[in-house]
Image (cartoon, rainbow, N blue to C red; front, side, top):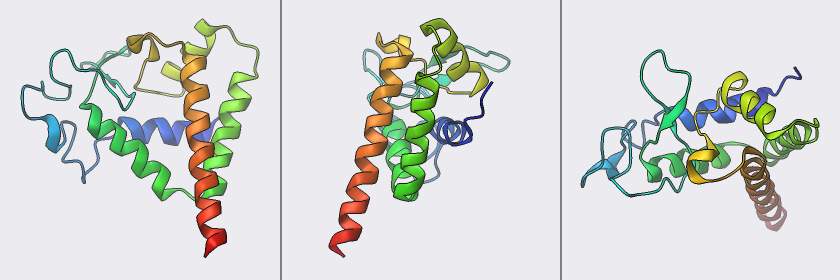
Length: 150
């Protein structure tokens, strides 16, 4: 398998509780949210489902959505535009590898360790990766534009 170190780093960041967010539940986890998950009936707007239970390899239990969204935003904010574009290129390489959805899901979820399974939100892995890639590129372009303005 081709190496995707930037994607692995991104997926690790999305799964890791951030100290600024107050841990896995984050400060917004109150009000009926289960530990490590959104309140009943809430969707995970950040798009990261943490892996459930010790010893389980299946990504199933969603973390607090706003915390997950903050993790992605914090990752994007900490990375220079060149790194964001490089991560987007890794996504392009993975999408261009000619894999079926099943193979792509296996690589993303198990080999690269992504804790979010897009199927939980009715998405195919390829569609979610394209959205993630576009978001990374847009952030990189905004950084470059801001740098150019001085």
